Image (cartoon, rainbow, N blue to C red; front, side):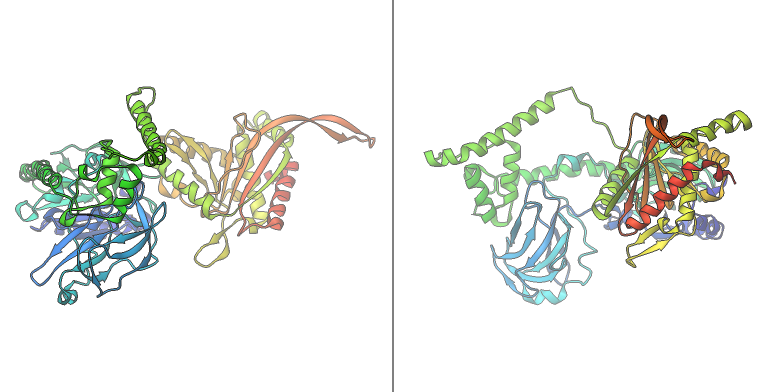
Length: 624
């Protein structure tokens, strides 16, 4: 079986050279991870995920404050706090404390710009600010990511490791969100590699340059099956298409870590374990199953810690918590403090508000009037949520990887690309006449879209300034060497854009055959990366629908996309041979060009549309 089906050209050329080295690595007693990266090479990396050491490639983000200790010093890593219910990331606006300074309980460490306002982050313990991990002015820092390191004794500042921000073992929080509980973690993270026979850990490969996660659509091999070099292990749904993942080693599939149907598996995350000898399969299965049992027992300890936390008395209340208590009129004595030394945190109050178990304190008539509106809003939101939860009149529609990437790219395009819109109407009758003649005289069946592709390609050849893109790094316009037309094809999983390369050099019949072939592959999810990556110009045709005209969104890094509407019959004045204008019926078609204004100005856009008009009016010269 050809291994170049899913691989980049470099990958297929290097595969034969690397196969011997990778096979020898897998026979060692220590575990080795083989990762198929976007650069199409195989890199052996340490299997730290199996030994229990934190591997940042397998974690999406930090989830809580991390604590560390060593024989020389003890220190604490502070994570980015969640200062509002909707906060997922924040900006470090200003550090109020500097490295080496003494900090007391209640001191403001830094100012954090959230999704709502700029708030102060207070220290809950006394000590010294040993190291700032996220400098002032940092943007979009995820909640939970380490931002600073503190120590109790000033002499311990110099003993804090320089790499403390990147080699930290994660500690799970006592209380987890429902969404986190539903996400299964790989059982391989708890396996001791020294207790396992020789094996290889397969990671989620990067099958396209833009892929950062994928879905396991189908496993073609089952646990215990024999695998040969080139066998298809599974089908992976990427951000572009559904591709096949081939094995590079012979052996046996011992354990599947990411079952069929797994969604949003990060690139580099373990998905399977293979062994060379069939006798080692049971040892792998037993080790993975035992580690899974240990993980299931772990939450029991968290439950005990939660019970202890509930019994903790409130020694002090943080300023942010005081504001919430006053705003919602809560009784502080009924709240549970989870902070150090019995400190009631803002998160404690927010969790009680979300749970709905509120105990309002007796309020004066003025306080009742001021807080009645907020209580009504909270009650209304709870009632709407409860009604929504009891209703069966809706259905969740899961998004495919392709649709998620499309949504992200379109948003980035509208935000970062200055769109210039140019519109023009053309007479479609010469094109329809040519299409009819080709069918009747030469039995060549082509669509209107096939001819439009040829017309656009010829116009791009005549106006090379329109066949360009904006280089962000250099800040200048770059002209493309070839005319490669991307055509929008609607599929069940989302919009795909297969490419007709060198369209200006191909005949209309050749373009028609290639469009049919690429469109069929797109709908079946069988497009190869080189068939949909690239392109210098896009065409989106909705002429088969009752759409007269529309404005399309540019697909970066391209600078143009042409929106084609449907043809409509209209009455037009036509100058006769006698010099008198007479009414005549004509078929008009609207073309709307969306262009990157950094590349296109009025002159280039006008020249391109003029060339299009000329090609449509004298359509038969395209056959020359």
